[in-house]
Length: 263
Image (cartoon, rainbow, N blue to C red; front, side):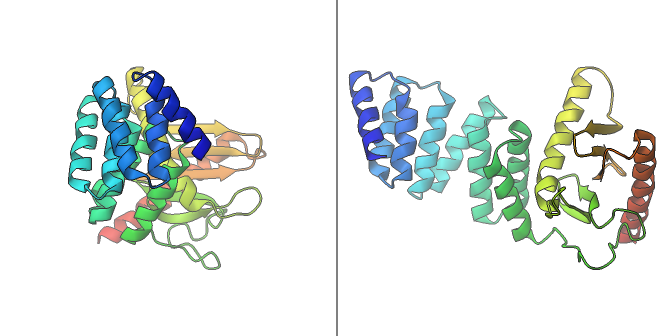
């Protein structure tokens, strides 16, 4: 890493306009060389004042040195120009989590996940924030599920989440038996928002259901209520018509349970 830093410093010395400062600043902050990282970030901003990634780098360094107020201002300014800037969304998500504003942290991290569903750091951050909020009930894998008791697959292939992806009931297992409920829940809300946005851009109206076929099984996603999402997973041997019928039964059970919670 030290050799890489030296190479990047040499390149920046030869060409002050080089974008290598982005990687160099990140490398320096990861090594704890924060004063040098600040200098590199500011030098980059002087050369590229309109480059949002340069402002993002500066904000990350500010957060590292403890200037959270200024970091928040910089990240907020980035989002006024690009509401889906991944770095700014992740940075503000961290700051809101650190300050105890879990709702705002969730808002920014969920938008970050919708922006890049492959970013594992966002998935992990969402799981951490939801755990801190203690709003994701953990179902007993050995006992009946309170939402889907009696339905086939409730202990391994049905998941109900709220509009933010927090688990309300059910449980999902991978094909090798691993519990993937939290990880799938973290992705689900963002994926559905993207589907909804795509449907509206194509003038298809509001989405009704999403069906995906895979080598190991099929997935059916629907919305039992405007504030919830339901995911059903079955192997490839289950016909599409039966999968839809299972989803309807599970959706009805979910609606009944949600109504009971409001009484």
